[in-house]
Length: 251
Image 1 (cartoon, rainbow, N blue to C red):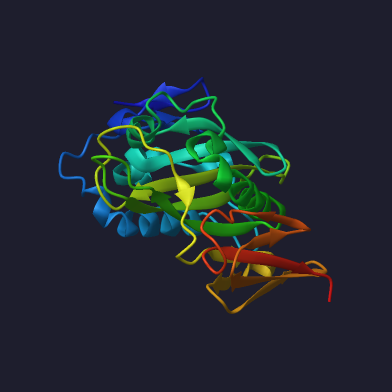
Image 2 (image 1 turned 135 degrees about the vertical axis):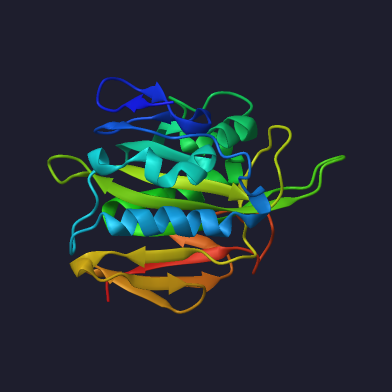
């Protein structure tokens, strides 16, 4: 199946709707790994995204060629940045539809998350677009009656438009077990967030408890024990010491 990019959104390989600059070939892959092997999928997507960068510049959204990331498409998506911290699905693969129980297109990314995680998610989406930065979040679909807890990862890779504005992000969501029914997600407070700024063309990686890179005149630090961002505190449902805290300082 082919996608005529730039002439409206079409369905590409593996049932994903694709959008971009050229006609591209692709075919379904019956041997696609289970979601528990999703880490290589994120690495593949980020490697492709990095291959499109030129020095400090972000990839342009029209450069994305779905044929180059065919294996990732069921888990991949593109979001439009419609407001600070808010991303709306423009296109998404089949596995996200299964996770949501409906077509994601036109929905906010935050609608996949439990209410107690939405402000945390909003904070990290805002960082991905504003800095810009690569953000990788730990996910958890909590245990329910007859359904075990499932962990996963969410990756956000910012994209520039023709004017150089960071207006979209390419991303993927992988879960560590197959999803057979819709599930609510939350940011997993027991695991690390990866945050990597892209200033001056040299990524500065931050994960876990080490000091995060400066962003303009502010510095970010990831600390165990709740999330605080610019005087906001959220995600305390799991008690002290269970979440991450984002401390913003002007030092």
